[in-house]
Each structure stands twice: as structure tokens, then as C-alpha cells.
Length: 48
Image 1 (tube, helix red, strand yellow):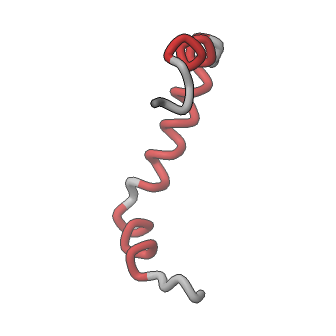
Image 2 (cartoon, rainbow, N blue to C red; image 1 turned 180 degrees about the vertical axis):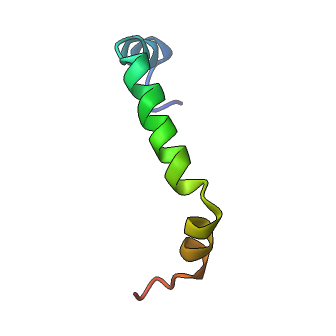
């Protein structure tokens, strides 16, 4: 049994500002797809 019904999910997806989501996705990709940042994340220990 899903956590949310499909019509509820679709309602909230339709309410999203697609331009803002695309802009923020680009910011995310620019940072987290950077190989230096990825190496830093992989090398970090949980205790730090």
C-alpha cells in the first residue's frame, strides 16, 4: 500500500513552479556533480 494516493501526488506535482525546480536542480547539479566535491564526500567520515 503506497504512502500517498496517486491523485494526491499528482496534485502537488502540478502545483510546483517548474521553472524554480529546474533552476534549483541546476544549482544542485553544479555543486554535487563536481568531482572534487564527490571525492570529498566519499572521503569524509561520519564522525567528523
